[in-house]
Length: 171
Image 1 (tube, one colour):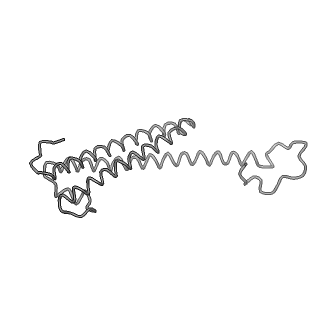
Image 2 (cartoon, helix red, strand yellow):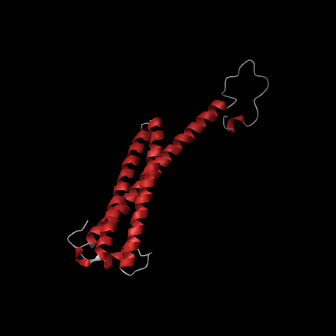
Image 3 (cartoon, one colour):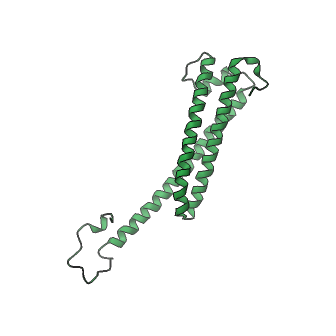
């Protein structure tokens, strides 16, 4: 796809690939955020089936993000090479080297990706914390029903229960 700025030669084609890759990465993070928001609602409503089915979808989206990131990094390295810079150059270092008409767009895409990444991390950490808390509560419940003092003693049971029964996982 050639834009109105093709006067900058081959670097422009590479830059347009970087922009397309940034847009794709942004879209992938947006889709992840939507999945994590839906998972958050399912956790809050205690819909364990929906939470469980969300995990493979989130894993697949995580893979899509990794693919998008790798593609963007490849194009970013190619752009650095086209500008005669090292492969490890950051967008902040690349930005002043870009044609003026591209700087606002590239800067906005990078900023938006970073903001979305922050929101994705927040949701992921919050969901993880809620799910972990639910598991801890279930663990306590399982331990409480296995506690000898609270368990119903059946007539055929002989002798005291084993020591440490309350803290052992039920198998």
